[in-house]
Amino acid sequence: MKINNPDYLVIIKQVPDPANPGVAGPTITAPLPESFAYDTASEYATPFAQGMLGAGNAATALSSLGIRLTTQAMTAQLWQGATENDLSLELDFQTYDDPDADVRQPVLTLLKLAAASVDAATGLLKSPGPRLSLEDTGKIASSSGSTLLNEVKQAGGALGSVLGISGTIRTDKTLNGPAANLNSNQQATSLQTPQNGLGGAQYWKSVVRNQISVQVGRYAFFDSVVILSAQETWSNQIDARTGLPLHAKVSIRFKPLFLVTQDDLDQIFARRT
Image 1: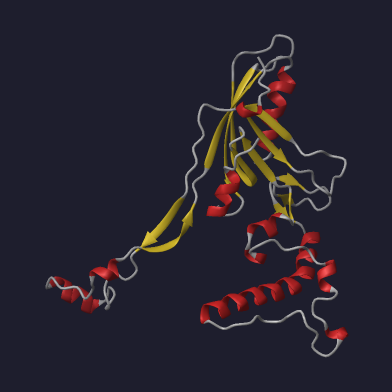
Image 2: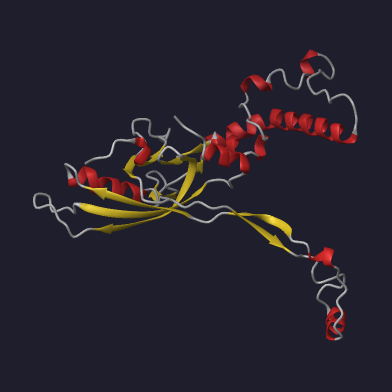
């Protein structure tokens, strides 16, 4: 029986490419696997554990005497950054009516999400997943001026609150009359920059093309990922009419396009109705 309940489906989508307006983005639907693992990790190190003399000859000489110029406080674990492991899904495709539509086509589509394509005009290889186009770089350049002004204003206000300085930095006033207004014309034509400015992932997602999303049931949604690999296993059960396999399994590995933060986790595992 074919599953239609979204609670028990994995849906992988790629947004349509604006360069090919007549071609819809691929969508692959498969039954939800028995389990799905997700983990986050942080790296910590003890950069001062070697002591005040580091690992030089003097430190080695003192170490031979059982002495090290360090303290317990200098062995503190200091955060070095966050890391993410590959995520994996084991997808199962079974023939219901047509082995080509039910098995062959979705398997090939998944493989193409991890395989490079060739530009017809230049012959150069292109990424199968998210990429920044040359047209989008112009949008970024046109909006960067007003964006930086807004970020300076926010940073100045935050610094003032920390230092106990009242008032705010005024960047919305003219310098030498109306013609010198820094924000009058730029804000009307620039991109709306989300919270966290140019350093935030949401801004860059708005100018990235060919984004791929992964929906796991209704409890997890990754809005922008890269497919690292897709490995298929064909069954030896062959359809007598078409000669195609009746069943196949595909193991995909993927990662979020950007590092996942605490706020992103709330969005990925948000309650959906």
